[in-house]
Image (cartoon, rainbow, N blue to C red; front, side, top):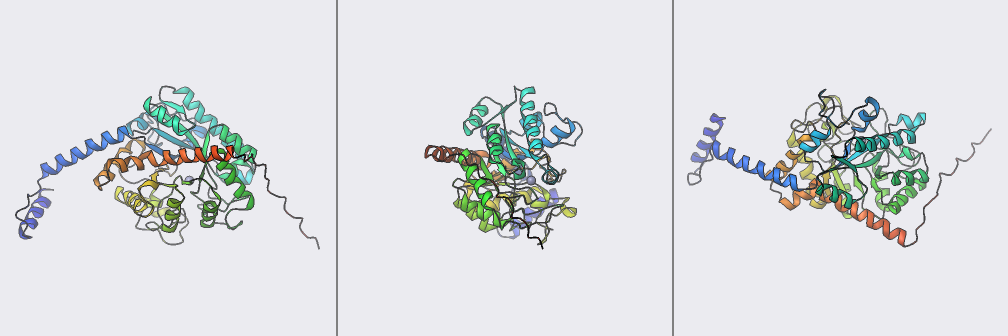
Length: 407
Ligand SMILES: [Zn+2]
């Protein structure tokens, strides 16, 4: 470090910049400490929202509990570390794997996970409360509690029933990712591990469009992470409210179908929606993703904070500061997270890194949660308007397949 500094000083001198004060190690350290203190304060004041956390899977499958710091080192989320991370609202993923679409039991799986989230709130009422609205998030932030929200991941969870969709809304589900890695009966997916992309509907089927409209009417955010590109464009054409990408990054930097192209980022901004940046190494590593890789895995071992921040910066540049947020994917990616962002306690580093890159306090607060809160508020208002204008619940169904010709 000293050698580097003396070289730096020498370079300044030989570069003719003798009039400039030579940065010293102690000055740099002091400046950095000041920035970290400022970041900590801003992070504490901000409403910090993450739209994708998969800890619901160990809650369901392993009897995991959020109350105590996980000593196993296996899980990235618990209440003590959520508090350290200054997290104010978490969307727990009601993740329904594609096997439930094939084998049945998708809705049951979703209902059980919803019950698990309520059970965590029951066990830890001093820290965690189920939230249903943007106003709830603001109220619980003031009360120093973490808002527990829910998003269904995998539209097959509604088993092609708009009645089930409404029941999920009543239970508190506030977004639905239209597909997981599998194409379902009404929406095409971008594919992923074990599920090559399958274009069965040319995007959204007529029933899929009905699902989007019913979500608009209910006030449930439409999530386009995981969907095929054509599905994305169909959603934007169909939705009368802003939509979200709950956990996706930028394709211009890491070329995987799960990430959004620049054209998509611009369209999302026009829709007043928001992209919530995914932290997973495979979606942010700028070094190895090859065109056509459905989901890179082997080379996903290492990524850096700089790579993650490059995705934030790119989305901010292309979509604008009002359309970017945090969608960590903690506990959903086998621990493959950038160095420095290993678990939920590390979230304040995002604030520090954004400030370091010159963003204002107000802009940083937008990315931390203000943008998502704005979208949720607009989605709620759009639903009220639709309901007030007399739009009734839809009971559309997928028409039965025409009989196969016999010969
Ligand atoms: Zn996902």
